[in-house]
Image 1 (cartoon, rainbow, N blue to C red):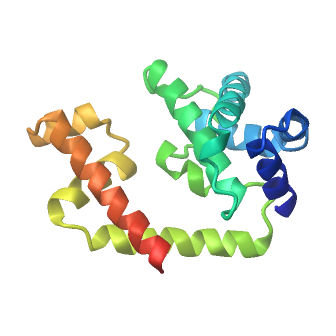
Image 2: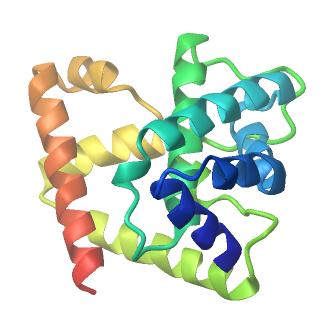
Image 3: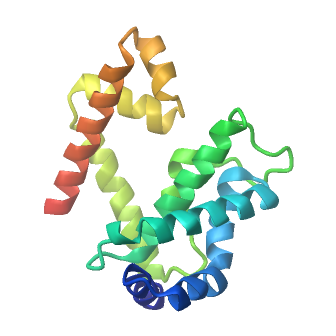
Amino acid sequence: MEHLDEVMRAIRQGSEEALRELMTSFRYPLESLAVQILGDRAAAQDAVQEAILSIWSHRDQYDPSRRAWPWIASIVRNACHGRWRRHGGRRSANSPCEVPIEYAGYLHCPELAPDALVERKELVRTVKEHIAELPPTWREVVQLFFFESKTEEQIAELLGLPLGTVKSRKHRALLRIRGRIDTA
């Protein structure tokens, strides 16, 4: 998806034309990802609109040396996650699939080449290995948050910990995982 990388680099420079290109040429994969998460096309379209606004307002945070799709997909996932939480964690009754929200960053994008899918699977395997290497208290929080879809508040209550402790354990764990992936 080199074209997407180019579009995102132009958006980072403030190109409104590139933003329009993102909204038109890449709308289908963005909405497809959001539908897989939310299970409702109308909610997915709203989430993509939120994500596009977020992409524009946070464009300076995009690292042009990295691929654009993972960064954009995480923004879409976060927009979906926000909508999902605001609506009590409910999915549409006519949901096309039951994909836990924490896997949204790993879902298939119709525009990804086979090499990118292999790379994504390898990344998932690597992340799981790094999670297994975390200190038990950090690993427990990460597993509850990402694999059991518990909120930080639910984890704090479940483990009998202050909310700040849960947040800091999750944050430290993610920093360690990110650091190990970046150095690999």
